[in-house]
Image (cartoon, rainbow, N blue to C red; front, side, top):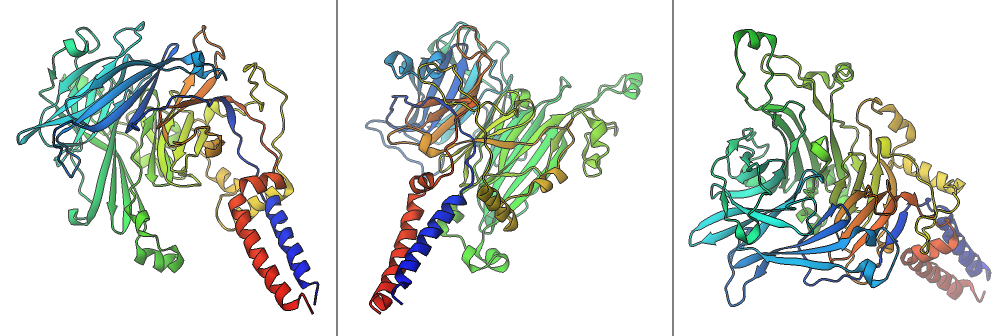
Length: 596
């Protein structure tokens, strides 16, 4: 039949057109403000810290270990000899990131200083509050003959009017390896490996930001530490562990003398990933009975919450449950769950990954009346040594496990209020989640280059019938939950809300020539009267090449319609594969039946 090749060709084109109709409507994109930052630094820093103070943005480029000239370096593990840490501080007016202006005055960064540390940096921790003069801290070590020594350098603003950071160095006690490290208000949290305690607390001096500063200040010795919660027994023998990482952070408590800590331990074995979540504190309450007796309860550590999550990836487990096609490759087994961690002001909301592509939230609440009605939560409410309920609780919603769509989580950042969250992945997507007061649909507009504050008419985000069909197909195959399922497990309105994915920044919109790797993300709410957009919220994105981009979260860009042209330009790789397959089949039909 001579028409077979033509019919097959038209059928192939129909399949391509049908695939274009099944495109899901894209998630809204926040308005791009400044994406032409011309900064380019070499070599690439190991970490980047963004700090905003009044009308100024500070970008700290941290190099963990640079080689000494004419000096041998050694160390196959995390402890190094012959390397030094380096910190470069850059400064820029915040106004330059709030307007879409490509002039040199708007995009220029000023180098404030470059500091060389005496040893290799191993950890970095940012301050728990953006309102504090303290900005961030570095953990570094030196090796003298056979003895290692650990130091902490804390960077801070000496006053509210300062235009540069100062620092002080602290000598830490002990020589055992420090596995995790967290800068808290008036204290440091460290975890040693090995140790009989999960963490230790080091008190910082009261007048840390007082002079003398930097090179004029002598090393301050922190000679003693307070022991924390004892180490819980390991789930698996030590010889089965391939890797272990941990994260620490202080949590909020209205009781003044209570020190509450969340400890996240990430274990990797040959068979699975295992994450343990432990919340402990030293809370003690003075009751009527203790007042009558004239007693002051001695503080002791109580384990308040202990949860765990296991993710299998071994060959045997996958073949047993999912089939041979799901066997992971060796590079997947070698990857470790990201240990990124972010908390709101005072640690009332903390977000952390529990798997390579999933994250959870721990929220503070004092609504014990609601929790006592929940049979699952009632046994876990906090009590003192006499069994009296403590009017505070950290709520862990096990049903509210969020999963990203395109790869491993590389970082998390939550705002001060705990109602905005940014999650970025290995493929450089940034997912913006909202909840509570922040979860208000912003107007959609095109960002006007000439007049950034101008907002054009609203447009709708109605999904087409084919997009709805694709949505129901995803539900049928179990790749997304239906709305009824989400409503069925929703939490009471007075408890912390659930994250809703509202905006996505795609890699194609990160306009930089070479390095598109994201180093840090931060939310900024403009409050200074000297700046435009008072009350607006911006997302600042620092790239590993030193560039910083800004997006206006309160305004959406007009989404591109789901047309055939958008499919052809956005899915060209899949289109090429489909065209090759169609050509092979059409050519075969033409060779066999075209001359009949």
